[in-house]
Image 1: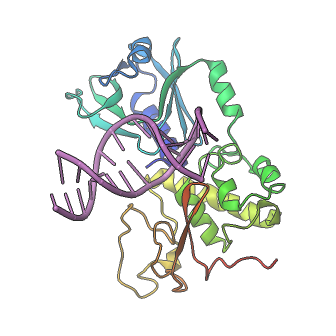
Image 2: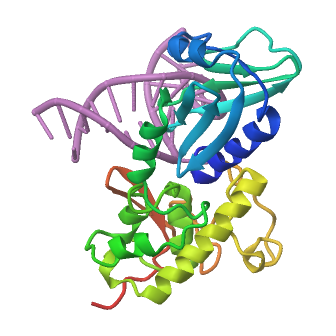
Length: 271
DNA sequence: GGACCATGTCTAC
DNA sequence: TAGACCTGGTCCC
């Protein structure tokens, strides 16, 4: 599901599957009918991802910009495309395979200039090889809680609710710590960790954040299955014991999103 | 079949 | 900060 790793993975998969080829495009659901008609029959020249934004370049037609939002999905299939099931906003296909896009919050056609403007309002992306210093410049002068800053796409692009909860846990940082109380050393460690975790997320197409020494087998506990499909420390584990210290994982609404942390492993910094 | 929930973001008050 | 919105999965009746 859609944090930055999903989008980068999609950009890669779409490039491998369809790159360089002329594609048929349609909008069975109808809400992208005009855009689909404009790229129909055009060659896919390249794909790009920045944070949670996906871009598909079509020769002579510009860029299809997709944001999956909370519910969006892309489903791939081999062979000729069957009758569309459900609300398919955009279907791309060749005779040999197809991709169906459902439920995106955005699916629109952009010019190069539109795309540039979008990049300009997005922050550093751990999956684009950025060094994180522009993000640090904003974080280090903000009194906003770090948990909120990590999800501000203008500061940092691609991190969502799972990665923010998990990376703060891995670094033992209280999510409510104001940005300007973080040290540069802590930030470079967080940035490097995010880049590594998210690269692994792209590879595996799921979010795993638990260190090998904390996996249940290594802790002498029975294996577990997290219902969102990856191994995590605190995300959506409210009320359950922390895998590391046993303290009950807490949850709270912060800036209209659910936040999860372990008060034992992520104690408040001294004032 | 309906209620509810979700890894996101924008807009209006 | 509340509500809206895009959709599908899960749970309950």
